[in-house]
Length: 529
Image (cartoon, rainbow, N blue to C red; front, side, top):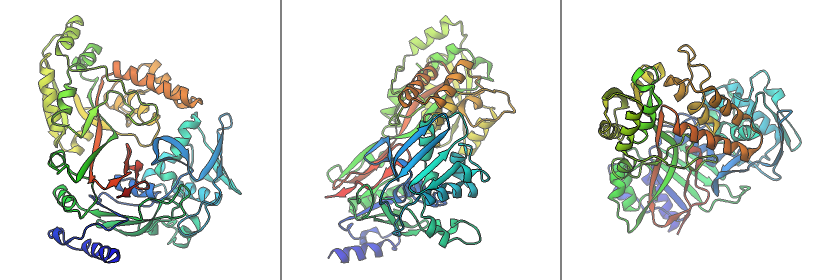
């Protein structure tokens, strides 16, 4: 009977979505996920840069060090069992784990690590910058990363804390591939890129059984995984673009998880058989003021603004379940986050701050916003609450590309946007919110500080760079917490919320882990009762 159910499910995956009623219940030992996966461009770890592809890479590959399903806040041993840092020599030496193998059965060797890092740098595809910031180039990578026996030596050029380097090496493009298998499938010098965009060559908790772009992914449990075999036999991720269809399939029992449902749909679910779990996400949402606009340059305006956001009102209505109050640049759930929320909606206090500073009101400000929910709803809330203190927003909706282009040109006045880290290290956001050493128009920088023309005080610039190079891991995190407090209190960037992600699932499912980024989606601990 189990075999029959599996066969029925496999057949159902090929049927049109217009007839979901013929689908079979999900079989035992198989987790079936309804998800929009049409964002995938590549699944090769050297190229993968989309949300869904990040999830696949995490479940199919390992890194030397990595954040794991059991605690996504702890940097743990991966394919390396131990490592020794030598800050003076800018070197980290890794000892590889005994007995780790790839899905092919090939042992994981130092040669595989050297090949994997070299491959990312030489292919130089989208995520390569994460590794090349360590000073690695196609010309020097052979000297910067070397291996012998069960030891890998990594050198880096730059005034970096070892903790920063380890976080870089825990990022997606640092995944280790089976060099023998990849080289066997190389075509015309592509270092196996075409083959790895349809197959996998990893050592992770799952192996790739089938991948059909824009249709489905099937991953099989790796019984020899070094950290213990997954508790589920396999995972099927089925492409279901429409959230309403995801809800229908979940309610019928044809899928176990629905990943892209709207808050209204979540609220309408039958709580008897379906549960909803909420996971904090890495994106922080903020309101910022361009310092090229004279009326927005007084610090009193920035301070008053922090008391003119109706944080509670928005999170209880228009963004309920989608965001939570968070007022610092590094997201909650990441090491080094500062989770204090000292500001609340208090228009009388805001008016007092403006009055004491001699700020004349009313002030009229254009507010650029992406023309989509929930951003337009948030902008209207801000418009109403800021008007209470004489700051009048004229909302300018636009497409995402229009809004971001304007932001990059520094031609906006006020901006409602969000920001997420490129990799799991506080510096990834600190450089965006607390650093700007050259505020000139011709010195473009992909940071919120430069884009808002905020000439960051030199003392804050120094603190940001000092934190980057601090060798004591705990002291370094404390430095970032202090930086967050400063930016929270004294910048033209008002950080308001952190995104949250709701996943609806059958009551029988437990152990699903959805960390703060797509790289932290884990199926290894999932069970079905």
